[in-house]
Image 1 (cartoon, helix red, strand yellow):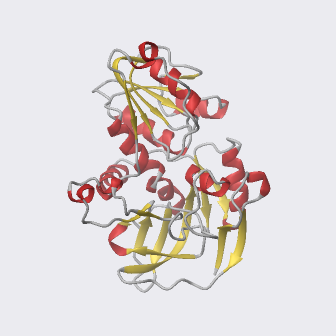
Image 2 (cartoon, helix red, strand yellow; image 1 turned 135 degrees about the vertical axis):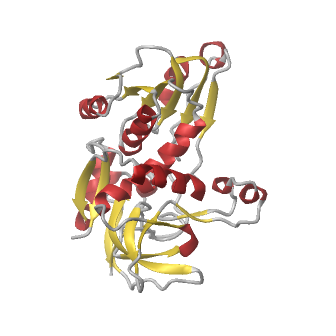
Length: 321
């Protein structure tokens, strides 16, 4: 089969992603073999390729927003970021499997969906409908799910004012979920195309800063320098949730200016299967507008380069032809 691997992590200009031919993988106990139809391209894939995420194994195939079919049954399924957990630790037992110390991840601990096939644990798959195009489903499996968890972590009150910093794949889905719940959304992004998209989707504003104090905010851009202004934009008692797996260093925070008056700073760590099930049920019952930029399977390197240069409007998706 054909696949892409991270050959040598480094700047995207050094072409860390390389095409290879491999044997079709054999599923282990409790696993199935999935034939890939489409795979979303996530900023986490970019972090892995550039070395911001330390590789956990050599020559890993990225990709964790996979729409495909189970070999032998033809069942259409989604393969997402969370690949496995121990099921026994205190975190798993209390329903916080996203914090499991022994958790593993698709496209990081095991080969992902930038390939013709991948294996996945059967009990970590999401059933998907047959009548929705694969490119519309793929972004839901990470961009949608992690945005859904970030929305729950930022303590947005009913009808509240939400700031979204960075307006890519996850943000454009999260904004729609928040607006559907009655929130007033303010997008903060440098990209003119992203500003237009935010306003098209119903954001109250899109610019360099929110025009009013915020009840809650989500930081999707992996830029630590944005943390102080995002905290400063919060009203008293507001919460900022950082949604990414990687963030550049946060500058020193002046306590009185940025954190006093009970502002809260929170991280978001992966997701539970319950998060995924809840979001997909919502998204399939009330489909969001999914803005995608499509790439052929052979263009995986270009898709990552475009993502690095903020040239993707919405979500990037690799599609099999």
